Length: 223
Ligand code: CTP
Ligand code: CA
Image (tube, rainbow, N blue to C red; front, side, top):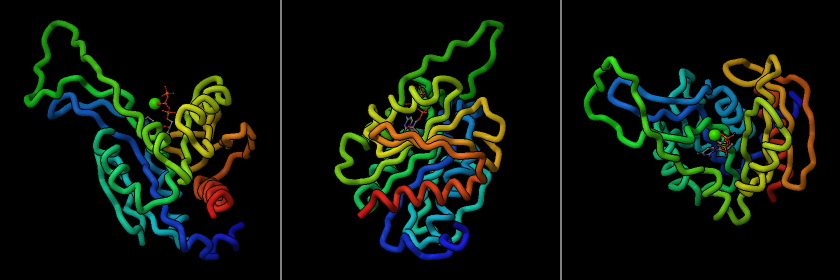
């Protein structure tokens, strides 16, 4: 497959990729976030560019370099900003790959000034963020929608629920309990489940190899 990937086989494809964590401010110095290095999403972006696709990368804060040749790079912080960037860039993309780790909740109030600690415990009330993928799933028409799921338990069952709830074409499901899967590392161990319930298990792979597997699938689905 390393030879195949040199081929520019995605030249007519417009792909929107989200990557990295969102951050939700508590006050000017504190925030809550999700574990995510952004490596998976950036790797998919790089491979898609190599294979000739037009790539829009919408990214939370990461320490990674912007991939060379990206058509558009949009830096965001919060889930709300990511949602707005995705919606703004939806029309021109036919493939949406959502590898970002989006915060499910945000502080109800963001303090303009630094919250001083007191002797008491601090309780932060959280509001639900919008589920970006679910919103896109409602209006996707013939766009191809790919989600990710990182689970600690009941991997298949949880992933299947997410396919249905978010109207996905397929989901890349990550078992966080396996060594060499998930956050920060350069490898992943996944199962890909499609909307018909077909499950394909993959061995431990480098994230760039998995990127090609995901892009091959996307290519098969798109006309
Ligand atoms: N996702 C999203 N918007 C959110 C939360 C998640 O678009 N507000 C997307 C993620 O980018 C990922 C997929 O939905 O592709 C699954 O995310 P995950 O956190 O595993 O699922 P949730 O539906 O948030 O469920 P939970 O966290 O309870 O497992
Ligand atoms: Ca979540």
